[in-house]
Image (cartoon, rainbow, N blue to C red; front, side):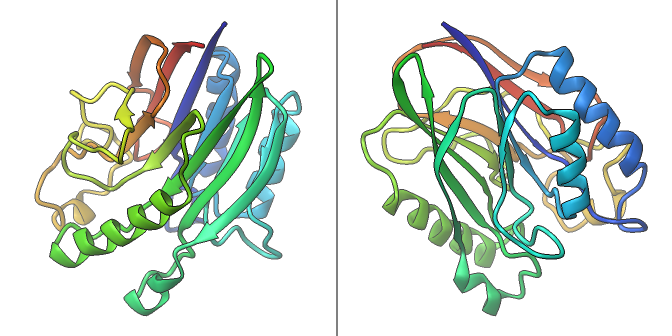
Length: 237
């Protein structure tokens, strides 16, 4: 059996902090359906109304986000063709004293595929590219690591890393890693913000797994839906 798993940082801030959001949401729905994606992890879906729109348009998918009243303070959302169970959100609580405005963390849940249970993790790590940021991301990874076991698991998300050499225990990258997923070639990238980064191109977005299976295709889509590019991995279970 083949499945396609994918991740995208959607840049779903309300206007004027992002642009063309309504148009980009429509493009996101079309993209997911056109490419027949099975599991999609999204970051920066901040507004509940945007999540509800996606649920309505992607009614054939199961969905999960942390419970929030006005807005999705984690920004994290998962859509899946397979039924979700044991869904839970783990916040990076220590970030409140590190001036992180959002309530970043990770979603951990289970899906059943071919009578086998797989775990899915969707996360968004701290973004500053300095020694402080590296230490903060290390703390976040340690928190994720504490919730890992030997179960077959996929970890997807925005790791805010400037390189493509990333590893967690027995996990390896199964997404394409020789092209940036955040690039000045993307029209939605904010040139002013990029001056705070050491590189103009970043390898932020990754898909990792600890499972042994054949990876059929790794792809970075240069479709401009966000200031990040959509990435996916097609695998054979």
